[in-house]
Amino acid sequence: MKPLFVDAVGIAAGGLPDWAAAATVLRGEAPYAYADLPAHAPALLPANERRRATATVRLAFRAAEDAIATSRFGAHQLATVFSSSEADTPVMHRIGSALATPQRLVSPTDFHNSVHNAAAGYWSIAAGCRAPSISLSAWDAGFAVGLLEAAALAEIDGHDVLLVAYDIPAPEPLHQKRPLSCSFGVAMVLTPNPGYGHRIDLHLLDAQASESRMQDPALEALRVGNPAARALPLLQLLAQRRAGAVTLPGSGHSRLRISVAPA
Image 1 (cartoon, one colour):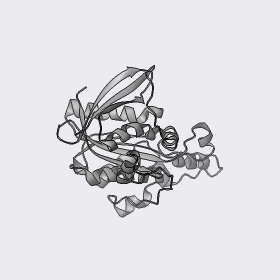
Image 2: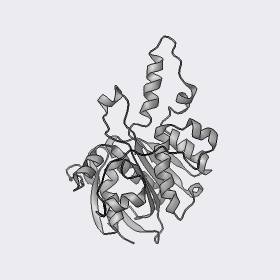
Image 3: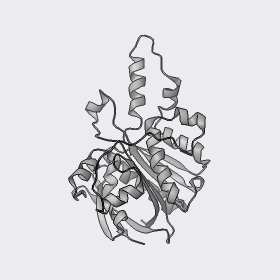
Image 4: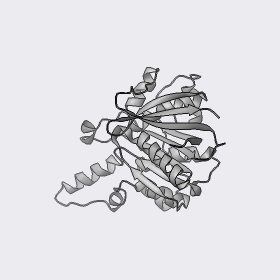
């Protein structure tokens, strides 16, 4: 595949509230310490839509808005790829619980938010964006598969792309079947055009290739605690502004090798 160029990065996670803070930690200039994310009111959303937005949507927006804040592209210009392993599990839990009662009364707002592309829909409204939008799910490979989808949009159609990967822990009893330890959202503005920051090249490998890990035990626990956090080894290379390569879990029997060359 042709190379991509990383114009901007955003993040939203406990202890890593934005890219500026995360980059400091990933460069080893400050220790990682978990801290709950404060509540986020998406700045781009109109008031009515903001009231309907769930915690999952707000997490996706927090990461995306962080990336857009330093991007040379406007939000309305970018095609989008939204990737979430589980989407809005609190909504699914509430709908399932409601359907198990004699009244079977489902909240209209929960029904509105129950589709997998809810975050993408909110974003297109907020950004006034009519560019292509894709929402996907790929278990623990969501970030890597989302990156491949963004690369395809860039290579085949020439789009500049906003990639957002995000997941939050599910409530019980869903959490027993899919335990995530934390919330994590990451966003990247990607372009096929040189001159916009780090160059990344993507290569598919077979499943025998070793997955990249974080040396810091706390960051490694964060990485394995959420599908979107599998991006952390790549984010570390970008924060350190150095050349290198990382291997992330891919879909099926594959791994994704990402080579990075600093601007």
